[in-house]
Structure formats: structure tokens, C-alpha cells
Length: 221
Image 1 (cartoon, rainbow, N blue to C red):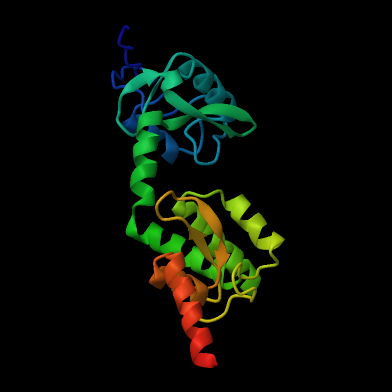
Image 2: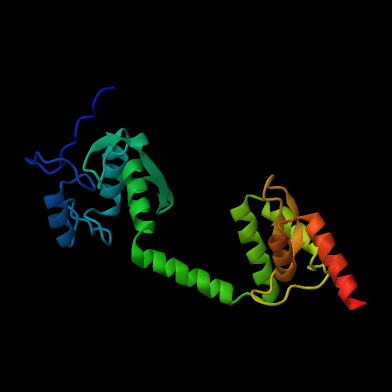
């Protein structure tokens, strides 16, 4: 593949590569400070050319290659993402690689992450108690690798009650726990926190639970 040749500034006598709008960085900054385009017509707002000159240069400059404002390389036009602006499709200012790196760094900025956490917290606080239970079930299902829609459907089919004691969730968190086989990972049902604790402390040992039932019957007589 042939390396694309850098296009030069359209200003007469300038041999610098194009930075924006067909001009190098120096001439573009100078052009923006003028009130009129080089052709004498009023220039666009926040641009160095009038509308006609801008479209002419834009169409000519974007046919084959473009200067990336992220890595300062002249790349084929296919290396840039597309966006709509002023009713037409244009190549983005940065190539796809630079856009990806910028997005990767942006979402990991602490101020951005803090803003995202605050928005999520506010969204959760605005939920009703029932919506919070559904949200919690979906979150738990995703963490355990279950289909969240199937878990929520199970919740509605059983009227939001524990599969063991048939009572609504209560106590800390006031939500049902996803019961599953820790050996096979198979989903078994939704149970309240006390019932989940009973199974967990008994180690899912049926004989141990039978012995506990037998003991309770004996001490109650």
C-alpha cells in the first residue's frame, strides 16, 4: 500500500501540511481572525472561509485522505469515522484509532467516573421499592451468569414471594436472593435472606435439615 502524500496548505507560497479547512495551522489561525474570507465574502461563524469556499475545499480535501488532529498523520479517508454536520456527512477530526484511545482515556478519568456514579445513584434513588428489587435481581443475575429476563419472569410468576416460606422479602435489603446449585451453577429459585441463610449454613444437606425438623418436633412435644 502506498503511503499517502501529505497535502499542502492552499495559501500561495506555503509548503506546510494542511491542518484544517485546506490551510496549515498558522494560516488557519490567521484566517479565523479576519472578518472576511479570502474571496472577500463574509466568512462563516467559527470558520476561516465563506460558505461556498468552505464546501469547495471540504469536498476536494476529503476525497482521498485527511490529516488526523490526534496523531498528525495524513491517512486515507476510510480511516476516519463519519458524522452528520450542517445536513451533510463528514469525516471526523480524529482517525478511528485516536477516537478509540480518546474514548478509552475519557471514560477512565476520575471526574467522569464520579459524575457517572452520581448519575447512577440518583437514578437508583428515584426508583420505587419494587423497581429497586427488580434492579437488584437483574444485577445479581448478570453477575451470576443467568438470563436477567428469565429471573425477573420467575419473580413475577411467583408473585414476588420466597419459594420456601412463601413470604415477601423482608429484613436487610428487603429483596429475594437467587438460589443456585454451587456445584453445577444451575438456577433453583428465588428465596428470602433467612431461608437462604438456612440452606447455606446447612450446606444444602437434606439429611441435616431433616434432623433439624425432627429435633424441633421432639422439643415442641
